View 1 (cartoon, protein in one colour):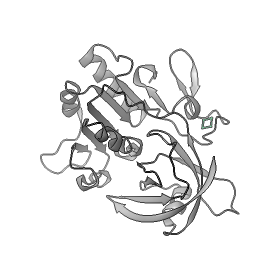
View 2 (cartoon, rainbow, N blue to C red):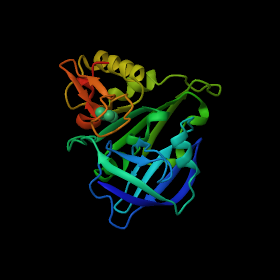
View 3 (cartoon, rainbow, N blue to C red):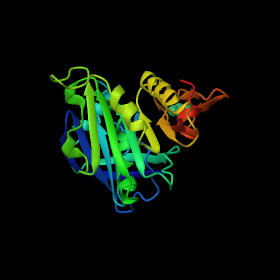
View 4 (tube, rainbow, N blue to C red):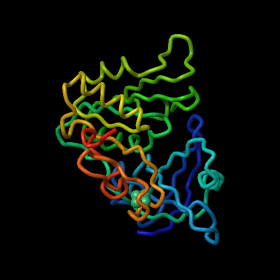
Length: 255
Ligand code: FES
């Protein structure tokens, strides 16, 4: 579905920019892990959209997080003031399945990819679930400030340029949290997911279906199944992440 939404607000969130867009008809059909294709340029400029995952899904408002980037399209988006009308297509793809029985939710991401996990927090809290978020940033500045999260979320971080006493990896926190969690949700690079899958396999002897879901670590250039640039290997075939995903069961992803 193509529609127009207006930038309602802009605010800094660590080194990222958080924007909220509003629409009187609402965004009722979007699920965490689905994405929108936002036109990133004036209407008369050549076609250019970027796939963005909402961080906030509200009846009348969507939130997006724009991490620092050299991408000219995202730079254009980040420069637009409140009141700008944006052109969106979506929601696209298949999002996360928040299973009914899950009450101890573990989220783990690289800071640049955390957006789709952010949107899982409100529905999980609404089910009285306990939530832990583990976040790794290349730079300390890339980590989300704790104030950006609801107080009920346990939040642990690691980064490559830590302050004295802070960890550089999430390894210990991840192994410990795996003993507690009954649902795992991941977003990050292929290497990040590969390492997470290895740790889950060792800790739980297998990646059982339904326990862990991950956002496929691929770009979504067209987002509508046309360009074949988002193929992911499930070990039993290759699938377009923008159509069959972008969220997959972790056990399904051949990383
Ligand atoms: S992004 Fe083009 S086919 Fe999936």
